[in-house]
Image 1 (spheres, helix red, strand yellow):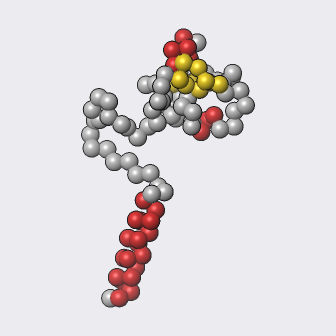
Image 2: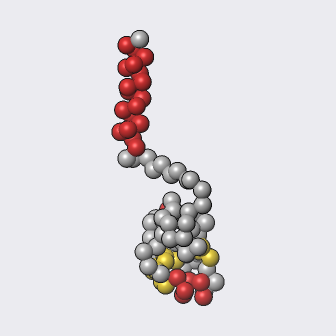
Length: 93
C-alpha cells in the first residue's frame, strides 16, 4: 500500500513540476472576439519575411531561426508583395 501511495505521489509531483515547462492548451469551445488564443499573436502590424520565402512570420517562428536574410516589414507590405501567412506561426490571420 505504501508503495502505491509513493508511486502516485511521485507521478503527481512530476506533473506539478513539469507543468511550468510544458505548455498545456485547453479549449472550451470557440474563443470570443479579442480572446487570447494558443497561437502567437503579433504585438503590432509588423511581421518577418525572408528574401527567398513566400510567407510572413512572427519573430519567434521556428522557420526563421536559421535564416540569414530575415527582416521586419509591415503586415500590409508583406500582403501587398503577395506573401501569405506562415501555417506554423499563423501570424496575421
